[in-house]
Length: 571
Figure 1 (cartoon, rainbow, N blue to C red):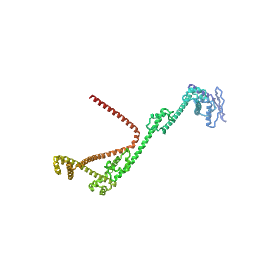
Figure 2 (cartoon, rainbow, N blue to C red):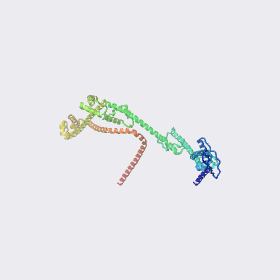
Figure 3 (cartoon, rainbow, N blue to C red):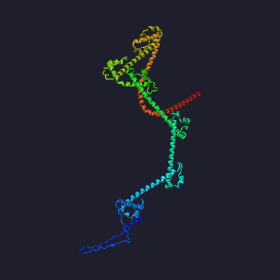
Figure 4 (tube, rainbow, N blue to C red):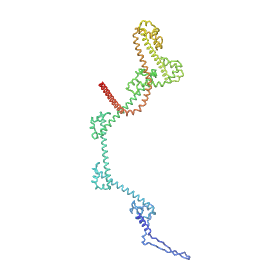
């Protein structure tokens, strides 16, 4: 800082050493003036001689002046890092220094010049480095002996006298450029190996998927491949063992995917086919319903004979393990029918009660429709719904009639049993008296329980009398054949009661089954994708569970047998 201050002071002194002159001029007074003024010139000069005066240059415009000042800076080799005080000592005596008027402007142009110089020098440096690097790269490429295992020391010893090597001055840069080139060689070799591996893998895969390898399936294993000498296949010799296994597994995986897709397509095709057959079978059911061949309370076992000869039923029945059986379709159909005619049936019942009072079991649909058709309850009903509701009402009447007949058979059976029991006991001493006995006498002679018999109370007198005569004849040995027929009738009655219980249970479970099937059908599409992905795992888990359960059961049996044998030995 002291040296800079000293240089600055010296410069200022030198500038002030110019000639400093004060002039006094003697002027004559105007004519007629009384007095005169005398002007004296006093000249003070420095001790040093005055330098010769130079002519100040002139410039046409501001741009020319700026260029002149920049040329001065260039001629004086002004550096980019020099300060204004240092630079002024170099340029102050040059006439071009006066090209710009103010110091502030000179400093601004100096700053521009230094910035331009920096940019130019940087560009020149980069161009030189680029040229040197290009020569070095050319030297590397011309050295054919360099490979991915070469070292820089070996390269330097061989080419250190080459100008292209010397052009890169930094040893660090030379080493970096050399290993960059070696890395490129390594990457190039890796890509070549990778391309060869892909090519060989493609050859092996093409061979494994050709007709010559029909032994490969979705269940093939690597052991099967080794047995078929996969190492000798095209492309396999130049591949590593892991690559061979990967190619083989890819082929097997593709076969499995194809198998899954094929099964999925078959499943979808089967679903569509079953849906089409179900729709056609529903049409058959609708036709049969229109004819009045069944009603909403009918069971499949009661009506299946109606469809045996129809082709639509035959095609549907020929499907093996369908998703929904014909019986289930029928149950769904009757459940929908019951829901559909629930309201019309109530209105028909009200109309019947108001017009004819009750429906007979042998009534006809047309006759009943004609009888109640003008009633207000059924006027606005659809004709098809009206017929279906009438059919339901007639079916109910038939069912009541059948129930009544069953009860009569039941009462008859109980009465026959009591007659046979008590008549045989009452007339055991003299069966001839039984031959002449009348109904009232026989009942009075028998146990008082005879009168409490439900059949004796419920059945009319003529029927009771007929049963009495038949049992009397059996006991007297006159009607042996009828005994066997009575036994068969008893069995038939039991079967009818069992059938009735079974039909009631079926009716109760039909709605539950329908709701369950509806939910299953609705969930089918949602679960298809999950089931496809979980099928294999599920099968494996089931197999493992079965095997483990079998092993556990064997162990339990063995322990049980051992314990028994030990107990026997101790006894």
